[in-house]
Image: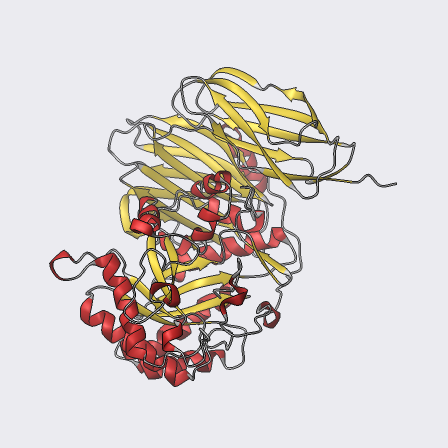
Amino acid sequence: MTRLRHGDEGRGLSGEVGPTLARRRLLQLSGAVAAAVPLSGLRAETAALSAAQGSRVITVDAGEVTGTFNRALFSCTGYAQLTVDSSPMALDTYRVLNPAGTQARIEVMMDQASPAPGVFRPDRMLRFVDNTNDAYMTHVESLGMEPVLLCAYNTPWLTRTGRLNEAPTDPQAWADIVAQVVKHFNGEGSGYRPRVRYVEVWNEPNLEQFWLGSDEEYAELFRRTADTIHARFPGVMVGGPVFSPGIDGYYDYGKAFVDAAGEYMDFFVHHSYGDSPDKIVADMRLWEDYIRTHTGTAEPMLMVTESESFFASDALKVQDLLLRQFSLVENGQRMLGWHQFCLLEYQEGWYTFGLIYRDGSVFARNYWPYWIFRDAVGSTVRVGPRTAMPGEHMVATRDDDRGTVNLVYWRDPAVATGSQVTRVQMTLPADGRDRILTVSTVSGLSGRVVSARRVSGRASRLNETLRLDPGTAVSLTLLDAREATTPWLGLDASDGTVPLGSTFTATARLVNTTPRRLSGILRLVNLPAGWRSRIVSGTDRFADVDTGEAVTATWQIQATSATEAAIAYHVHADLVGTSPTHSIPVRIQAVPAAE
């Protein structure tokens, strides 16, 4: 749903816009998420814990490649909005997720690309951002993201009344504008380079809000566009119908499109709102089978460029996203990309979408499930045992460019029971690289690095033991020590709302995930002026902290003035001899004291 926002209400796509989410159901799941108490470094206690609580051995063979990890399954829409409508801190928070290998949906507006016949404006054609000298596209590529062009809506000179949700009066002229866009990025002839490989035709044409034409008019527009792109730009894939759920006849609409234009389609695009992981997998199979049996396509490809599910409980949403992403990793062999809607906070109706607030703090329900997969990249490698226990999910990867080996492991609390001693036995690459092992967990509504240690390049095998409750996701990452330049710094607070005059605590924890000793100072940054803070435990000054060692500092903070809205503050580390770093911000709001 490319919605009208940031002043676009007057664009005239459909007159009355209104919230589109009223059609979509809020999913509410009952039950409680089990407490999660991750522990590392329990090798000496393994036998006793194993006897008392059961154990599991996970094996990873980093030398046996089994395939390619599809990083595009962790894409998010809305990077353009993040670049122009947020703080530098928010951009830092996003980059922690490691966007390299994900897709960036880039919205190309036909009225901006070609506002009049014979006029083409590549500098202005992208929604939200200036593309002068291809600055935005170059920036996206510099982060390792692959563009997906959403070519959307009409231009006044191809309408009858000026409404941009009308079907083009000349479908070929509209297709030619798309071809101009692709040519601008990819070139043509001897200078051809497939900088852009994916093109979507229109957005949600099954909603009158975005398309006033008939279904056959959309199919004809798609066929013309696909023919034009295929004839001129080898390797560029054209996808549709980019349609929305939450309406009657949803499946009939998709099937009718495949019947009318499936032979021209390179990938099938739909949006997913309010769907459970089981339904997502079932829909993938449904569309794969329908396309395979109703076209000449033996290996149909899919893409979902908007998705979200709705929960009354943030803790349950974390678990839902973990299950969804593992379901995609395990079942999405024909899925080119999956995009969470959306990256930057955006409110529509009663719901606020987003992973990251404009101030750089995060939506815990969405951010941390993506964070735990941040090092899953490159080739998949053998991980076992091959027969999973109920509710058990795991994936292991190896990235030769960065010298990284990663395991993500999670037990679904809806199925798995009991605290489990988890032994990870990893066969290491025989490349002689010294590495740093970092152990991270997501539990409840937060993510953190819990431990780190050196691993010699002479080692052929690694063993690590943890105790994990159902619902705790763990990531073990081995990173080339030469690449491990930044320690982990986290910040947790006792409250997000505090009465005026009252106190709360904030605890910073720095874990040295680098191969060198660290010294420095921790500072709280961006608390309201005049608020009082004092160290009540730990220390804000440290020296010669070795790899794997941690420094903690807890401040008691008094809110001496009210805030109109929540403000984001963070902890900053000034480090001797190396670049400073900072935590992901957390939010606090001071409200009037109760009388």
